[in-house]
View 1 (cartoon, rainbow, N blue to C red):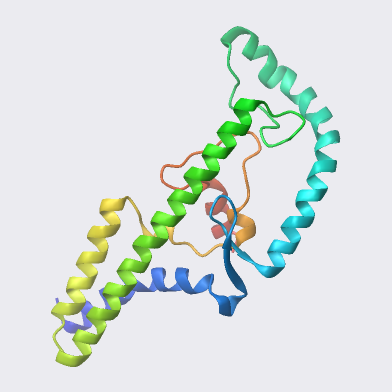
View 2: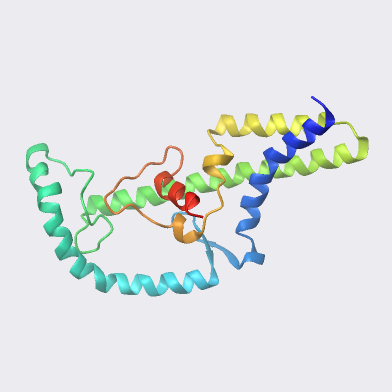
Length: 204
């Protein structure tokens, strides 16, 4: 691999992680605080979310009426035969409709989401620290092996953790990250909200 190729590979490996880290910096208005699920928050969004939390207490009541009508054919009737809720149950985050199990499941989901994001960001920061050291070594010696070592080390670390820049280090707004699938299509393998975040990415 030529020096030019080494530089290109280094940049392609590091840039998505660098952009991801800087997207949620204080310069962009973020406070360093996160939601229960680990979504970064700005001062403006914290105010908005506080207002929405109050509004939700009110709107959950009429939504519970509609949700109950929806749940009769989509959840309650099937549950009478299977003994368990279906994946289509509405209202798992509605304080009127949610059961104790729903509350427990939601708490577990948020914990998994936070753990995932904290692990993802920790790996990102480790790679960026390694990249800075490798870059300084290259600038001091002119030896491209330091760039190659960073590229290989970063790729190995990401692979070991099951992470990829295309899936895990997409820059998204907190609004998109904080969206929840109301009918319970939740997964944490590896991204808590892959369909939602992918849609947000494609839509800009």
